[in-house]
Each structure stands twice: as structure tokens, then as C-alpha cells.
Length: 115
Image (cartoon, rainbow, N blue to C red; front, side, top):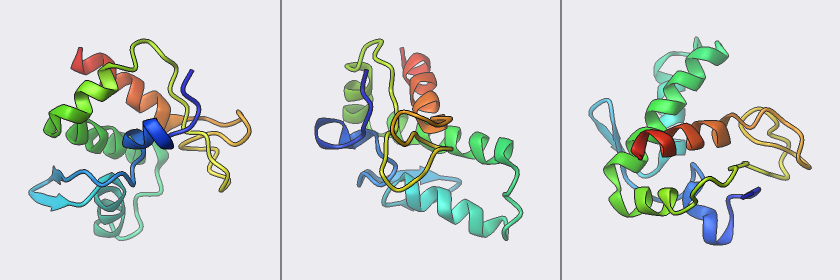
């Protein structure tokens, strides 16, 4: 189990500096790409299903456009990926092992797609 995207696994974090081209614009990282989509949608992106679809597309773009990161993601094998954090995000990650962990789930889906 990988339960934190720090140190050796920092590359899994959305704020990891890796260029991602999404919808014709290149962003410094996934976090910027996702935030841009939220502002483009003028706050109407409150629908969690819509947010997750957007996040899935952005995460896939990051790894499909950066082969070295795709190789690192694939090297995690079958490990459970959990975006553990201390800032209280129990939707995209987990806090003290509790939460929905949608970022971790998306990463595992992208890993499977890349195989």
C-alpha cells in the first residue's frame, strides 16, 4: 500500500511539477489544470461526478504525456494508492486512513489503462 504521495511517490500528487496539455492549454501541473477548469465553468462544477470526470481526464493526460511518469506509475504494480493527507481532504484523499480517496482510485484506473 502506498498511503501518501510524498517522497518517492511525490510524482503521484496533482501539484507535482509536470507539464500537462489539456484542452489546448499547457499547465505546469494537474492542480493548475483542474483549477482552471473549475474557473472556466464559472463555479458550476459543483457536481462531483463532473469533477471526477474532469480529474480523470487530467490525470490521464499527465501520465500519457509524460512517459517517465507513466513508467513510475506502472512500477507501483498492484499497490493500493491512497492520497493520505493532513489538511482534511477526505474526498480526493484520506485523513488518518478515512475518506473516499477518489484521486487514488483515479490513479489506479489510469495505471490499469496504461497497461
